[in-house]
Amino acid sequence: MNFLLYLSDYIIPFTIAYIIAYGLISHCNIFEEFSAGAKEGISIIISIIPTLIALMVSIGILRSCGLTEAITNVLNNHFPLPAFPSALFPLVLIKMFSSSAATSLLLDLYKQYGTDSYTGFLASVIMGCSETVFYTISIYSTAGNIKKTRYIVPGALFATLSGIIISVILTSALYT
Image (cartoon, rainbow, N blue to C red; front, side, top):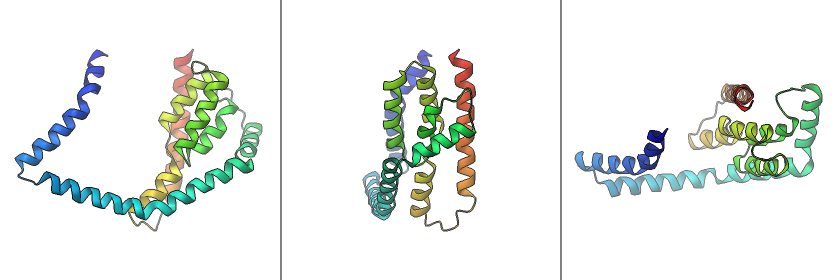
């Protein structure tokens, strides 16, 4: 375990030193390459701003109109899962759209149930094992100019569901 702590302290400085050394060995102008990458990154950011604004507005609408609570009630009534607290349904739903909104829900769960409770522990594991599906798909398909996303959404939703199931299994096994 001490080795992992030691490694985590030095991995970023080592990576930066490696990139600089590789650039010097290959006789590459490191500053020009960095500047070109930064210019490309800024142009990508400008192209995805409308998508980001639309996602943020959509999330605000979902939360303020009470749709997340209605979906939570329907899921809780039709799919009562003993190892999955109903308080986590909104977290899972919002996490698919926005990680920052899910983080605010996570903090609310911590205040209500505590960080060391089963619900708090499972919420933490779910946050680490799931992805902002629709945010990621919209950003990468916009930046990559991808028009055909037929299998991306079902595959991403399946991966998210798998992550949630594994989170419940691991938390149930480890928390007891």
